[in-house]
Length: 176
Image 1 (cartoon, rainbow, N blue to C red):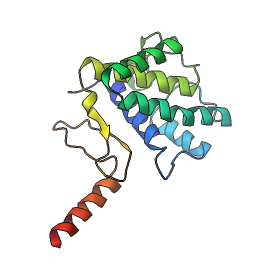
Image 2 (image 1 turned 120 degrees about the vertical axis):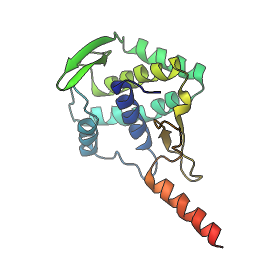
Image 3 (image 1 turned 90 degrees about the horizontal axis):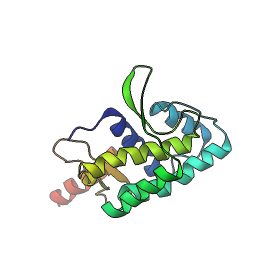
Image 4 (image 1 turned 90 degrees about the vertical axis):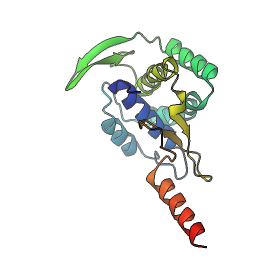
């Protein structure tokens, strides 16, 4: 299934944010949040201060729960997030990006925008019965999330590092 650009972008960003909490933590400095903001083309307010940084880091656990729960729990978490932040979906267009959905104003704090954009993207996964696109990394020593947007649903590892480690282990096992 092909998802809208904003759905895919929000899911990719959410999975990266959640996985940043895995060892080694890759979101330990405000500069890393600045890079995340630019990389994932967030718009609106980005204060770059310690409070925003702490709030984004604190999102990692609730987003992980939203992305990994069963369908009913995921729906409850989506609805709670949208209600809490008084999300009002609207179509917007800015820069080179055609119409897409924003559900909170550009003045909303970055952590709120991340949470709501993730919830909005998860709506598409729930409605299309595609929650299986999200899974845990197949590496036994990793708890990272995998977002599989491939056609044949073949992605098993959260990163090339996990994939390579397992490929090398399988190769060595075959050579024994």
